[in-house]
Each structure stands twice: as C-alpha cells, then as structure tokens.
Length: 395
Image (cartoon, rainbow, N blue to C red; front, top):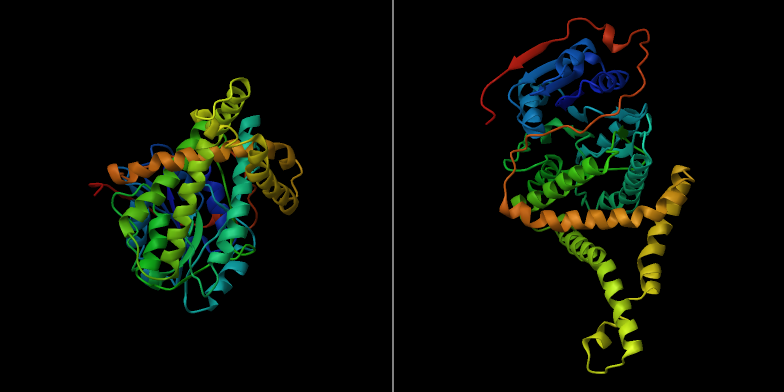
C-alpha cells in the first residue's frame, strides 16, 4: 500500500501528517508531491522521511496527483493507494477498519469518513462556530445520506473525498485524474468510477476515519465551499448523465439541492414581504390587491416548524452522537450558514458552464498544531528519503 500526498505551501502541517501516516504504513511507501511550493514544504517532507517530487510551476492538486502516480509508478508497484491532504490526520484504526472493505473484489475505492480537527481550537468565536457547523454537516451527510448511498445494491456514492480515501490501483490506473478544466479532482474521480463502471465504492461511518483542518474564518470558508460546489457542477457538466442507479440518484439529488437552495435564499425576503403584506391588509383591506395574495403566504410559524425546528433536531442529534453539548447553543446560528451555502450553490451553477478552471490552487491558512513528539522507530529516523525536482510546462 502506498500513500500519496499532494501539497502546496504546507510546511506548517506536512510533517505531522507524514508522521501520523507513518504509524500505519512504512515510511518508504509515503510519497509527497510538492506542487510549486514557495515555502519549505519539500524539505520538511524529506526531513520527515517521505519521498518527495517537486513540481514547478504549480499544476494544481489533480495535476500533482497524476504526476505523483506516474513518477513513483504507484499503480505498478502497489495494490492500494491512499490519497491524503497535507493536513490530514488518520485515526489509529484507519487501516484496520478500512482495508477489510476491499475484501469484496468488486470494491475499487473506500471513501474515508471526514472529521474536523479541533486541536488546536480556533482562537476566535466565529472560527469555533464555523468548525462546529462543518462537523455537524459531516455527521449528517455521512450518516444519513452517504451510508445509504454505499449500499451494495445502490452504489450511488457521489464523492470519494480526496483528503483521505483509498483506491485499488487496478481501477486508479483507468481514472482520468486530471480532468482538464475542473477546479477540484475528487468529484471527477468518483464520477469516473461510475461512468466507466469500474466497480463499487464502499463507505462505513465507523471505518477509515480521518481528521482534517477546516476553515475558521468566514472568507476562507466561503472560498472553500465555493470551490467544492463549483467542482461538483463542473463534474456534472463534464460527465453528463448515463443509465443506472447512480445517475438516477444523482438527478434526484440535484433537483432537491436546487429547490432547497432556492427556498433557503428566498426564505427571509418572502417572510418579510408576507408580514408586510399582512400588515397592509389589516390597515387597508383590498380584495383586488397583490398584497392579499402575498399576505399569509409565509408566516413565522411556517419557518419555525418547516425549517428551524427540523434543523435544530439535527443539531440535537449531532450534539448527542458527538457528545458536544455546546452545539445546542451554537446550533441556533446554523440555519444562517445553510443560507450562505445555498447562495453559493446557486451562484456557482452558471459559472460551471461559463468559465473553465486551471485547477491551480492556493492553500488555506493553517493552524499550527502541538509540536509532535518523536518516539523510537519514528518515521523521521528513516534514512535515505529522496527528493526529485521536476520543472516544465504545466500542461
């Protein structure tokens, strides 16, 4: 089994990611692609014991992964490749729970379960709120949606997250990792599996758990979500629709996503307009006025019962499952973040058809973790890591 990490200016976190991975696999099987980094990413990765390929200029994550797979001959030398982000920390039982899912020969990819890193905690209240919202989102999507999508009869998982997932190399070598014109790679790689009928994607909430740093500023949160959603729409544009359960489920999901996003964006304006129209009718009743139709169209009770209460029930579930009672207070503001997400979803939809993306990335600001403690046999003590500089055209 090989580990492949694509990194761009990740000197702050890459060493601990390598060190955490080396507790599960031999460090000689860990490979890092430093993609146009202008900091010490490459040298830090070498010091931590990984084999390093340096690319210049910046090709983007997809280009870096493709270059790493080809240069290190991963599909020829290994049976499974684990793709990691530079800030990913694997749980101690990641492999013991995740690898058995490959016991079914039809399984070609195991989607890791995402958890958010809360150590170190964000220094700001807004940051802690954003991270809590993201953790609730991970829980809801993975337990209530993705687990069902992974049923053997369905095989309808829409994303194998690129931050910590495993691929059988017999399938990986048939996947077009680069996906020209796409801003992110993991949606495209997942759709490639379905479009080419390469096999089944497996996911289980208690298997292959990994932790990632999520944005703790509003600006970085918006940029990340916009990138994710744009990548989804671009992938839909690239692959179109085919026959099969996955594509039917995808169509249903898109319809639900668009309708719910439109509802959330219009919710507050409709509520305000309806309340004003109700007040106007109370003062000057007019059976022929437009305000009669608008009056009572949406009431505070409707919003409470139809939107806020169901959302808060999800927060209660998350607080219980994650044992985070503070979510009960933070959850009062989560509906506002859903409106932000909905607006970004609708805003990026036309962009997927009107513009192409180079894929070149800019890494978010990282929070430095506690200094790692070296133990006997730690990967940093393994000799003879390699670093290979590569230049040339980004194409």
